[in-house]
Amino acid sequence: MSALVQCMNLTKCYVKGKAPAVSDLNLTIERGHIVGLLGPNGSGKTTLIKMMNGLLKPTDGVVLIGGSEPGVETKKHVSYLPERTYLEAQRTVEDLVDFFADFYEDFKTDRAYEMLQSLNIQPGDRLKTLSKGTKEKIQLILVMSRDADLYILDEPIAGVDPAARDYIMKTILNNYNPEASLIISTHLISDIESILDDVIFIKNGQLVLQASVDEIREKQGKTVDAYFREVFAC
Amino acid sequence: MLKKLFVHEWKDCWRLVGLMNLIVIGLTLIGTVVMQSDTWSFASENAIIRLTMTLYVMAYIASIAALSLVTVFFFYNRFYKNLYTDQGYLMHTLPVTQHELIWSKTFVALIWQLIGGLVMVISIFSFFFSMLDPADKKNFWSDMFEGLSEIPRTPGVAVVIILFVLIAIVSMFMNVFMGYAAISIGQLFKKQRLLGAIGIYIGLYMLLQMVSSYSMVFVNFISIDTYSYEKMMQTILTLLLVVLLVEAAATTAFYFISAHIMKNQLNLE
Image (cartoon, rainbow over all chains, first blue to last red; front, side, top):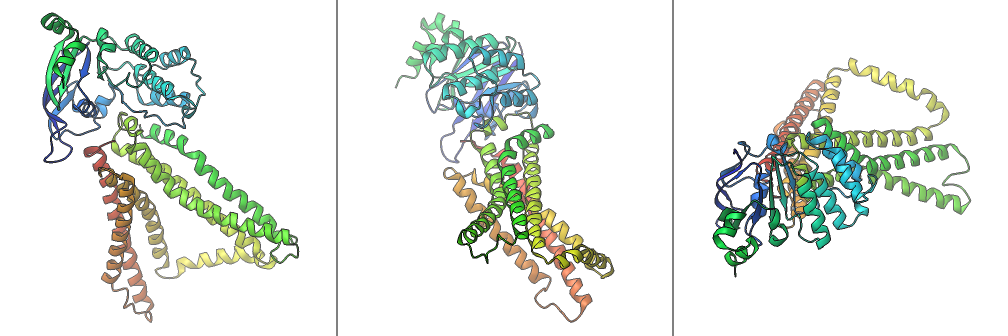
């Protein structure tokens, strides 16, 4: 197995003299794994994800995606879903599909339209006329319609109703490239536990634990959710 | 990728700025037709006609003002929203360089500025032309071409014109990049990023004015010898060259400020 993501002494400090958001983090993620990036609010999950996507420069250390620092080349292979609605409201669904197809060689237009059709979303629908939940589903569809090497989903199920959560989980599982890795950041562990291979616990920007789900169940005799609650008990 | 970015940028921008240009063109057409008529005049005895004419002139001036403001600030706002707000999460994760992002936006903004400028010049010229006496209209073009043909024969004037054109081109880039630099510096602020960007823009503008003023002192423009044509021409050429160099340096600096911040200090909210 080759390392897909490598963080070496990775540190990000937003304000000099204050506690870093990510501190001296070392971890490796192999290909073909579904990894839960878990931690309480403010633990540094989003900062770590932003550095993997080249949206933030590390203060110290390095993050490598497929052996390269985040840049034009890595962005070709990373499919990223941020925790925000990042699509322009004036655009139609068709415009967005065209946009993704134009910039990402691995984007599968047919797959995107198939998923959109299953939700009765019309290509001519303008984003501003759609509900927040539908917009989030469209974002997810666009991200999952790529045959990427690495999918990074930041809080994909936060703020959506249980039915929508099921749809999102189904979409992720049915569409991700099995040879790729998938990093899901969330604190709604019980909803995603069943699909995870590995978990990374992160607290105050530092790695607390990196282990497989089976290992936690065997060694701790608990579910990941229960173990998380124990580790991060206030 | 630059071409793709340009095409999508164009698609996202053409509606509003295109509409503004069309409004000015429409009002110009109405105005120039009305100017030919004896009925529609400010001197008319009919109060409704006078009121309509006043309203028309107000609408025309407002449309011209709106067009000049929109062609500048719409693209600043577009740059800010598209690259430094939530939309930035998409734009900065595309497999493109910061330079491609900046240039695609710059080309679209400049093309619309050129179109807007041309529309305004042609519009104002059309009004001016439609107000001329028929006899003057007849001779207008021949007089103009005659005047233009004199230019190459006047020593130094052709160079001055070339320098003016170059300054105008560089100024267009400089204005766009100055806004981009101010917005990029503004996003380094923890809070009130837009307000910070406006403050930086005003600061950069004042700095530029100061540098220009010092440049004028530098070439001793104040003590110009207006009695000697050659000396005057030499001073003007030197001054224009200095202005061109200052603007080119500022344009380059503004561009690299934005590119540097995007590459190394990006911090989306």
